[in-house]
Length: 306
Image (cartoon, rainbow, N blue to C red; front, side, top):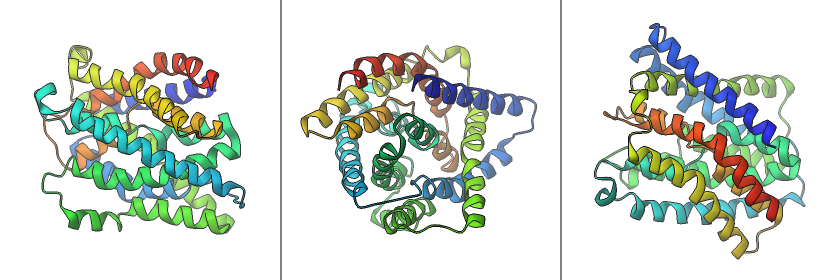
């Protein structure tokens, strides 16, 4: 598992810094970064969510699928409620939407799928698919509300027609019904989904190029949210799932998801909603770098002692 994690992590870091380099030599600018972020959020990412489900489904998988949904709802609810307290403006002394988002949402879509597929196989993917269903809906409702100041109930209704929510719901439907896509359609969608990770990480590299890397570890709020998200959240998740007596495979998959670095969509949302004075690039980069240390330690402590 660790080999697969470090391989994925190395690729993520290399792509971030390739985006950083492309920004410095003016190949990626504000205009192209805006186009990339919009393309990812409206085309590539919805297809990636649709394709994140396993190809086969049987009735024995239903229990694991429902456990994944239940675990996701419980864990997300608790993390979101905690974020409202931990990252109140009284503590961080500044705009706190980025910290709340970073604490609740991990890089489950970009790193999670290949990691779960390799480490846990078909059963793990069924749990992962269940976990992702409420995760995506929450990301594009609550997650968006953190960035959109005039967010209201109409936006929540609109979220149901968001391409990403449609993608995950259609993916779940096709998965449960046992439909098989034609080979041409399947291979086409695989190629589109594959664009998500590199393009998103290029955008992060672009945003990082606008930040002062020398001060990366000097901003205590950034370090604080990264450490809390990488260490406290997975430990809390482990305790919660043990209390509700979740199956071992469910604990393993969901705890592993909470060990992953902050979701790259943090930077994409900041770009989409034109948030100024953002620290999203620093948070995603630092979280990704620190996870190289925290993940193996937590795997040894938590997953090897279930």
